[in-house]
Length: 411
Length: 115
Image (cartoon, rainbow over all chains, first blue to last red; front, side, top):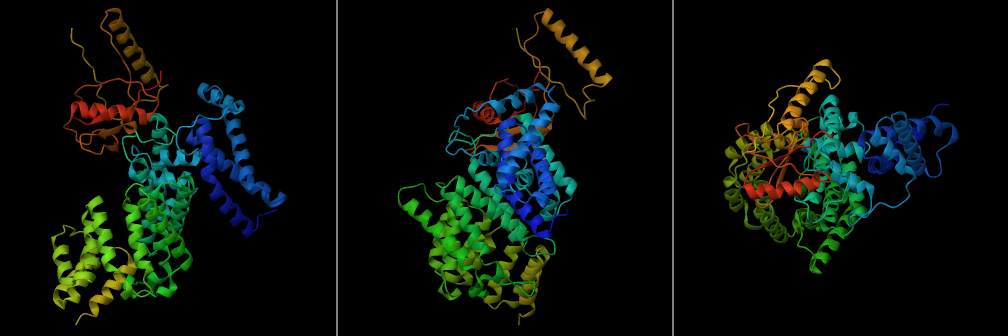
């Protein structure tokens, strides 16, 4: 009996949901990420054999977990000459709970911190997180980031080898850790989201598989770390950005925020994002830690999505939030975005003076911002050169189409 | 008495563990170590895993920076080392951050092969 497309889609959905949980539980139990991943994969194969005949079990997650655990134990028994593994197999009969090592007892969180460990190369953190927590295949990750499958496979296997060899632990970091480990995890998720939303090259201006996966990871972190303001901030930022997705493109061309049809924004996502931002503000006002950069970026997004019309935007508040963000992360890109808000508040000439001082000559958004400011100042010849430079430096096809039209409309 | 570190410089891949070349190398280095022990010259010996297992931490600034791999600049040389025992890489990195501050140099953290 062959599986119907509906069943396959259902199995795929369940497997994506459960993959991180299964791999995380087995990895902690056996201390072997390879074994955990293979066992999870074998459980999926068995599900695809049995479920079309027997139907989807009432607790598919539990079924997959049990099946994967049995596969892992079988494999360890087959390789029982490997002493350490044999010892690990014996742990199966040990029902004593594991000692608490952090604020939250969840294997997926431990696995997340291991996959996003700063001792791994940045691109390996992303690939490993999507593979282990997201259950994405190597082919899917390669497609998402426009790199060869062999390269992704190599990144993942090297990262797994380093986790094992260097002793990267499956544990939840505490305040004594030498680096900002939670910030590192959030950066990985944010990078996945941005890669989907602001796709650099390739034919798709937005790759929703990546944005959706990033939001799913963001929701998972939120449920595991409900007290962390930056986790709520990142989720809010992604929701408020994704809410504008439908209005962001028209006939393959980028639509800037001021030109977007605000009626096409996703009201549900905006409500959810605003609620998270309000929660963050209340926590800060109640004596909590000052907001980090994700909370500040979410707050900026909230001000934008609060305005019924673009002309209703509270630019004063946006500049103030950018001031806070710049104090926290004084990067030229934050300064550039702040200048865009300054243009609305103090005029394009003031903004242009700021933008011209920034050393961002290779960055397409710097050229695009200059082009727009020069256009508004009536300096058409300068604007044309800046549009050309922005089109040259940019990779996203929708953005290039927009810039080309703006350039051609110059007087 | 002065203690010395004999740092084995190696380029390229090692032969497989069970190959005849590797077996000859293990026998020769084992015999050398035994001679050192017999002469009272032995302090510690260990084979480091490959550079792909290394992590570097630089805690000279306010925020420690952790990167994958060995020292990025080849002009740096191995100036000295500690051998520590730690439960996992996180614990090792904590100790290495203290060491980095103490000697004002970046520290490479690399696991030994388990014997």
